Image 1 (cartoon, helix red, strand yellow):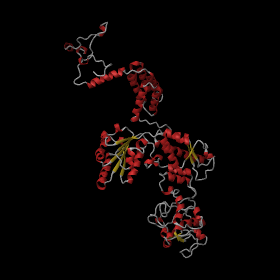
Image 2 (cartoon, helix red, strand yellow):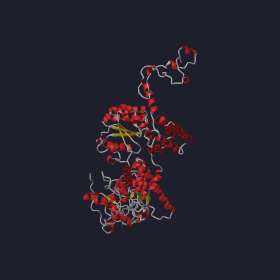
Image 3 (cartoon, rainbow, N blue to C red):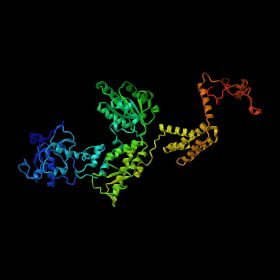
Image 4 (cartoon, rainbow, N blue to C red):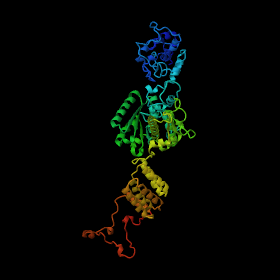
Length: 638
């Protein structure tokens, strides 16, 4: 509801009057700000701390002057149009002995109940600029006094509001607001915005329309998008690599749930215990029974819970006491209880494409007030122009640096944002140190973040690889299949992907020994010798020297002729044994060994033909009676 000003009603104009703490003149409350600006210029002795550029705004409860009536400006007073003071005609230049000196940034406002932030008396109200006080006339309406105050609302945000979070509009206002009082260099403001909290957490979106890169899972036409927009959230398992948006999607669901009075609880499986889960479930039961209120439970890193801990959710997810949302980087088929998996829908989030990471980085750059330099811009803008204007961005980043950061992040938005934060902070710190040493050839408030800064901040290419997870088996499978297909180039790529990701070289060497027998086999018997030699060499010298040994063996096996004759025949034998019904057939007597007299008397070894004693091939059965005539190289069943 709009709140009218004192000047709208003559009676209110007389009731809501305050007294200037500098000259003790009484005036309408709506005019006190302009009066203070003019009055403090005429009477600088009234300043409590003249050297302070900005003072903390005084709350209504902290100043007794707020409870006293007051009004018009010092501008009117200085021109001879001021009203007589209520204290018996004291002069305008007299300093107050009763009221404490008030800085120019203070506001003296009446207590208007229900005043909105940004309106007079609200939290967002701030002092008027000095330029507004230069005018001789007082504001004619409440709305005229509001406009300049809103311009400085963003400038006061760093004094009372949380500097750890901001939005794009607030960031733009902070870096591009013209006029107003003298402000700190923009480089320092960027430093304040970046310090204290990871940029990845600060830039986390709150709405689905800002959630980019996962169109296949939550695109505009998907069923899940429709359910989320309707606040009909099913039990979900969010599966994807690090930095793809699992926690962000849960954060968006949480924000949407609050709008529909749905309780949202977050736990991390890395620190939570079964008792914590049971407490949440018990409270969810009470909420549902007494208030008909739903509860959504988000478990981050749900694969850290063992099978028995995951069983705690089963009956409550089944009956709808809670809606479970789990996030995991591991394959749910192996890490999540099958019974729980059947009660949830698995949403697979893919690694973010480069375009999506670029969009996320550009959004962060815009929020910070950093200007991106394209190829057509000067290579070093720090040496051009003056950096005195606070409206110009003082931090620049090369367009190529943003692209490089997006590529090196390997689809991990968190790594990209944190890399950007580290690169900017490093350049700001380096510029500050350079300024202290002297010899500045350009303004110290202008900073350029280059491609080399980004690479130095990341230090490595973030290769997605987990030695104990899904990617471990994916890469070794790709290596095996590439060698089987005789593609030596692809085989080298997957080998490098594993070794650069931190894989144990002896594990790779053991797999090559297996491949030499399974896929090359008798087509090139020396392949097995090559693989065993590679394993021994890796054991002797270790990484990184042994990587070339593995590369040589991989190329040899990829180019070698292939034969799976032995592998297939042995697979037929295993199938025959596993599919046999009843007791296995006994070993024929003539094939048995007879080391004792008793065994010879029982017929062991009788009828056996010793092959070296014959000059020609010997016809003799070597299989049990039930398997006579079976050839495992030609048939799969016995």
